Image: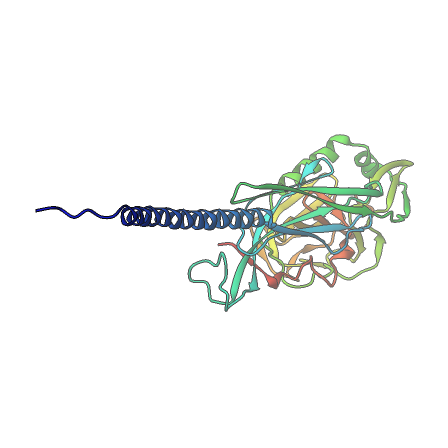
Length: 359
C-alpha cells in the first residue's frame, strides 16, 4: 500500500503557520512584559515623587508674638507648632548666646472629617486634631543693645529630619529716666556690699531655676496693690553718685502694713529674708513667668503654697535696701526682668484656653 505524501506547498504553509503562531505568541508576551514594566516604572516614579513631596512638606510652623519689634524691657513668645500628621521630637531655640526653655503643650484644631484626620490618636473624636505646641518666652532686658537679632531654631521630627529656621526680630530703643539717690548709714553700706548683692542674686536664681511646664495664671494679671509709682521700671539708678544698674521693677508707695496681693495665680517658690531685697516672696506662674515682692514687713504664705490671683501674700514694709515703706514688684521671664506694665490688665500671648496640657 502506497503512503500519500503532503505536497511541498502545503508543508510550507503549515511551517509558516507554526512560525507565525510562535512569533505572535512571543510578540504578545513581549507586549505584556513591556506594559507591566512600564506600569511598574510609572508607579515607582509616582511613589518617588510622592515621597519627595512628603519629605519636603514642613513638619512645623513657627511664629513670634506679640511683635517682632519689641522695646527694651519687653518680651517675645516663640510658638513652634507641628503640622497635620507630623510629630516633633526635638526643639532647640538659641538666642543671645543661650538656649531658650521650651515647654511642650498641645492645641486642638478642627480636622477634615470627611477625609479623615492624619495622625489622630486612637479614641480622639472625629473632626478634632491634636497639634504639638512648643512654647518659649524670650526676655529683652532693659539694657539690651538696640538692633537686629535672630532666634536660631532647630526642629527634629519623627522621621529624623532636622530643619533649621532663623526668626529675625529688632529690639527698639526705649528711653529710661535717670534716678539719683543719696543714702547714708546701713543703706550706704548695702549699696556697696558686693557680697550681699551676689547672695541675693544666687538665692533668686536658684528659686527661678525651673518653672512649672504649664500656665498657672488665671486670666489677666493685676497690680499687687494701689499706690503711686515712686520708681519706674528700667530707670537708670545712681546711688551716692555710683551707677548701680537698671531698676528691675516698679516701686509702689503704700502705708506700712498695707496688704500685698498676688498678681496672679501660681506656686510660691521662695519666701524669706534677702540682704538687699529684704523679706521677699517669689511666685511661679508657669511657663517661665515669675513675680517677686520685696521689702515686706510680713510674709503670709510659705514656699510650696498654691496661691490664687489677688490672694494676701504679705504686708508692705521697708526691709533690706529701702528708704521708706513701699513694695518693689518685679516680673521676670526666667531670670530677666521685664516691664510689669506689660502684664497689668493682660496675660502672655496667645490666649491660653486654646492650649491644652500633655498629660
